[in-house]
Amino acid sequence: MAAIGVHFGYTCACVAVFKDGRADVVANDAGDRVTPAVVAYRDTEQIVGIAAKQGRIRNATNTVVKVKQILGRRYDDPDAQAHREESKCIVVNKSDLPRYEIDTGETTKYVSPEDVAKLIFHKMKETAQSALGSDVKDAVITVPFEFGEMQKNALRQAAESAGFNVLRLIHEPSAALLAYGIGQDSPLGKRTFKQDVTGNPRAMLKLMNSADMAKHTLSTLGSANSFVDSLYDGMDFECNVSRARFELICSSLFNKSIQPIKSLLEQVNLSTSDINKVVLCGGSARIPKLQQMIRDLFPDVELLNSIPPDEVIPVGAAMQAGILVGKDSLALREDSITVDCAASDITVKEVDDSGEEVFTVLFPSGTPLPARRQHTLQGPGSLSSVSLELYQAQRPIAQVSTLLTDISMQT
Image (cartoon, rainbow, N blue to C red):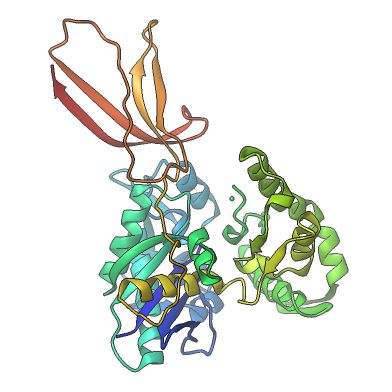
């Protein structure tokens, strides 16, 4: 039985199959190896992928994009708030949870982010089954390193609802390393750098689609021609963009993309000379200028990009799935191992001498899990019971924290 790996990205989804000792990305019914993570609701049907993306201009208020940004989050979560402000599909509050408001013409229904994700996972399952000619269930799903337990659980539940047996959730960086057999606060895939402007929403959607195609063209060619039919008030738009012009416009954004690499090296007290391999992953890693800047930063390092950057994560996930279902033909180094780590600080809430609430870090971000820690709490001797609250927190801790559990103990 074949094993598959699924990468559910912010803008695209991709599935790879491990078979006969190797992992390969498979194409969808449109012949594309990467499927837009877009879901459109029209009357009684749901449309997933390129057709939903192409119809977004005419059906913007019933089309969901970047659902991963809001998956597993409360309505008032900062990421959910940013998603609401950007989404053309209305997001409402239902019992402190976000729900998409879908107008079907006759009625209005409210759809959870998990239900949207389920449709995308189902599309990935259909793609894998079509390629293999048989049913597939066992899968490894990739998750961003910064995902907390609520986001991971929501992603797992969506995949299982689509019919997958989730063998494991694997961090996206780990999957990328595994793809090459090797034993970030600036996610370009979220379209952080694709800013919309006020004005005509329909025209802007047309322009964004054309710009997206031009960006992909400039990854392989020196120039790209963009044409938008009837962009605004019946006027067509056409322009030619050279790669040099594109790189000049995006130069400050490229610099911002490189800065997290430098910050990470400083954090772990390493220099560029201590690194011997760099893996390129994610669609934006196809941009030649960004690749060159990474080469300049690591002049003596092997840059691994033989696998298309937007396919490397699902390939690694498929290889992990092959391991878990017992494919002996997959050769791995004996010292290779995948270790789960805390995606963010795990803290305990305490009260200091002045009576103020403070958070103490028990397990810093990056701590291998499971882990054990002894921590002494101070309190008056007359207590008969103690209640502890553990939080998952992003730094600075006081700004964003999520309650993981509360523990009651009798003294």
